[in-house]
Image (cartoon, rainbow, N blue to C red):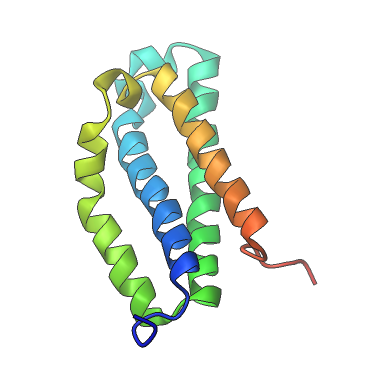
Length: 131
């Protein structure tokens, strides 16, 4: 297996964080446009959760891509990222509907996104350091 990808542990972390990002994208795609979701847009907390999750998702996607680029071969990055992207809708449908829709699901999603960002930060130099 070392001839394919010598860094298996970073590959697993990349796949896990990319899975969270792909599932989060699908959850947030159902929350927008906010005008079509009165259960979320009806309160300032719902709007803040939705927009905050978008920012966290952008940070997670950028951090995961950077982590993969700096720790993995590009072939592993493409194969693992593509496989996760392909099977993410299946994972999305495994979630209970109350977790996918509404403010409770957005709160749970922000915890998952924040935890994934924290994992990337702990793994070491997942985000570029300021010069």
